[in-house]
Length: 162
View 1 (cartoon, rainbow, N blue to C red):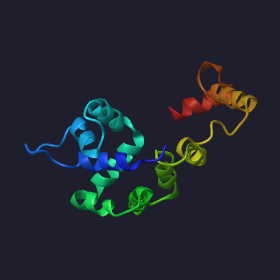
View 2: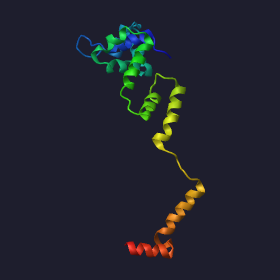
View 3: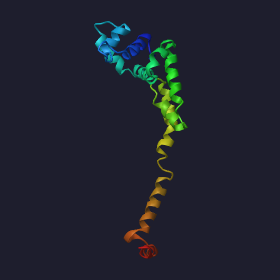
View 4: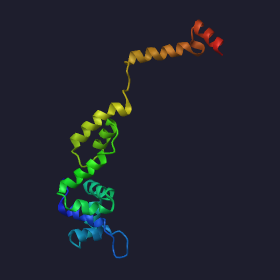
């Protein structure tokens, strides 16, 4: 679901401070954004749980004090694109780039899954380079070199070392 104009207004209202100097509540921000006063409390809570609203609000906060004004004049989707571009400036390698793509809630799920697939071998490596039988043979070879099951030659080598 795309970010609506009213959701955008809600995010901007969340950045404002009330008369007491504290940040406005979710209900107050929903009222300022134009939602009904009767349902403003519930709607404000819903909007704060929405990942797109959270991401937009984070992008406004990252811009600092001028954030709200800088994004006010931009078209709706342009603000998110600008925030992503600013975030991409700090990326130093391709794995970091892939991570930023698959963790970005504003992108399509298909794109995020493809980025996760591409990053997977670099984050966790391959499960096994050899097959099951080769793995068993290698483990048996290690056991044959140590302890009471070692061959006579291996036991002599161990005695010389220790």
